[in-house]
Length: 296
Image (cartoon, rainbow, N blue to C red; front, top):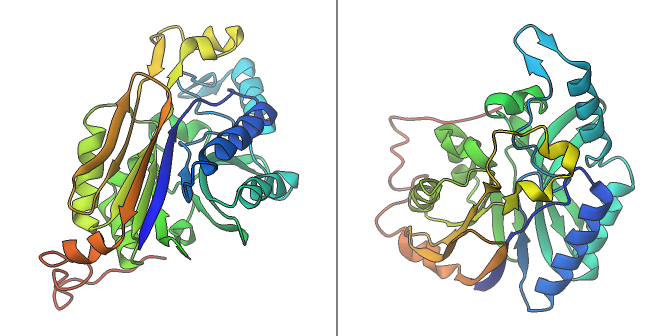
C-alpha cells in the first residue's frame, strides 16, 4: 500500500490562536488539493513554540510580567473541551485528509505540549501529551502519564510518535515500536543538523517511516513586545530541518533548512516488511527470553 504524506515547515501566527487556526485551515486546503492523505504540523504550531522566553522565572522567584505572559499563552492555547476541538475536526473532515498537529493544550490552569490525531471520518482519535518537557519548557508545560503513549490504526497504516526530545528516550521509543507503528511522527523544535541523525536512527531501529517536522521561524515574526523578550536570539530563530526518512534510514525528502515550505513523499508500506528481513526490534531481534518491557 502506498500513502502520500506531507510535512509542513511553517510558522505560527505567534500567541494568536484565531489567526493560527485560520492559517492551519488554509494550509490543509492547499496541500489536500494536491492529493496528500496525511499532513503533519510542527510542535506547538498552535499558538506557537515560545522560543527565547523565560516567563520571568528564576530559581526561587517568578515575576509579575512572567505571570502575565503565561496567562496570555494560556488564553491562546487549545482547549479540547470547547469549540476548539470541533473546529480542528472540521478542518480534517472538510478537506478529507488525516491531520496530525502539534498544539499547546490547555487543561484547566495547566498547559501540555500535545500532538492531536485528527481523522477525516472520526474526528479526534487520540492525543499524545509530552511526557517529559525539556529544560525551561518545564516552566510552562506539565508532564503527561503513560496513557499518553498512543498509536492510532488508520486506513493509512498505524500512526504514532513522540515530540522533540522525547525521541531521545529509548523506552518511550520502545512503546511506539511495541504498538507496531508504521508511520512514526516526530514534530519538534530542534533545528540542529544532528537532529536528522536522530530520526534516521529511529527509522532504522523501528523499521518504520519517520516524518520529522519543524517550524521555520524568524524573530521578526514575533510582535514587537515579544521580540523584546528574546534579546539574545538571532533573527533566524528556527531554521527548520524537516525531513522524511525510510525504514532503512534513507532520507526520502529534505532536510529542509532556511525557508518555509513543505516536503511531500509517497510511502510504500511494503518497504517496512522488506526492512524487517534482518532486524525487527519487537520480533526476531527482541530476545524476550532475556528482556521484558511494559509501561503504565
